[in-house]
Amino acid sequence: MQQHLSDRINNLPTSATLAMAAKARELKNEGKDIISLSLGEPDFNTPEFIKDAAIQAINDNYNSYTPVNGYLELREAICRKFKRDNQLNYTPDQIVVSTGAKQSIANVAMVLLNPGDEVLLPAPYWVSYSAISILAEATYKEIPSTIETDFKITPEQLEAAITPKTKMIFFNSPNNPSGTVYTESEYRALAKVLEKHPTIYILSDEIYEHINYSEPTFSFAAIENMYDRTITINGVAKAFAMTGWRIGYMGGPEWIAKACTKMQGQITSGANCIAQRATITALDAPVSKIQFMVDEFYKRRDLVLDMIKGIEGLKANVPKGAFYVFPDVSYYFGKTISGTTIHNASDFSMLLLEKANVATVTGDAFGAPDCIRISYAASKENLKEAFKRISDLLNL
Image 1 (cartoon, rainbow, N blue to C red):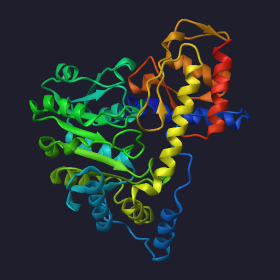
Image 2: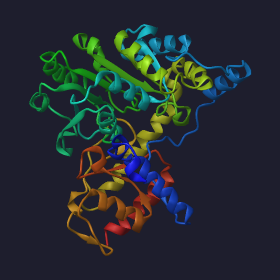
Image 3: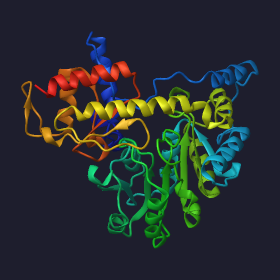
Image 4: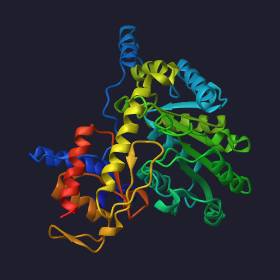
């Protein structure tokens, strides 16, 4: 009955990361030994001190509907976190807590974008940015980058991409899928361009800020004349290994926060009460309490980069953050391996799944059709075995 579905859902692409994860699970259920390097999910357990806070909240009988924009105590904790980690001054009225950072992003898009508005997406970008733009009935324009530029766009590219219809631009640093981290000076150079276009709003997705192997993440809203036009997105899924707890949040101009609260009030209402109480404890804790996870990701990154060097034709930049590598695999386009001709990154990713039993994600979904995304949020043992399988397949 496809013809009875709305155009909205028919035109909406399926999340490539979730689709590959589902395909990997399906093959596992068939008895195949699949190593999944497709999902951006830490393989650590949530730290004990956060779980203890959740248990305490249950024992304290937190079981009622929560305020739509989040508990005041949590919004105050978020303000403290923004001040401590990002040098951003927000008040609780500028904060909205949502069921994951994805909902935070969707809220912002829904309250700011009108049909025909244009969203700029520096590529590669997280798969849901384009889909959320489509849901908001806007159009999106990719600003391409390559491995040679460390997957960063230039001010000149940004200036050339802006049109009278441009309403928003999405930045994401550390970046999913490339691991690229923009420096303060690079962001300030991009801000110089945006100064000339005061009707463009900036969404800065900083969900990976603590998984950073170089200088601290710089928040776009910390640029003085960008503060009133920037919405900062964050959450606890990645750095605190709390993906299933579903807590994200935004900080931004109060009028945008109020609009997001209004939108959320008609969609999900307030986020989970127990998860919110646990998040207060997570955000108030010293960042050093999660450093052990970051240190382990750093070791895995170096392990993966070293293994990539042993595979002919794979080119990778050195990610400065997040837990992904994003190798260029275009060397294999036009080649036939194990009876399969590789035309593009999607073919290459499917080859790895079907012939090596390793799940990755095609770069097509991220606006970078020459690459694939490999998550190293997996054990060293699984990473070593996965790359042995890939090497055995490609180095025939």
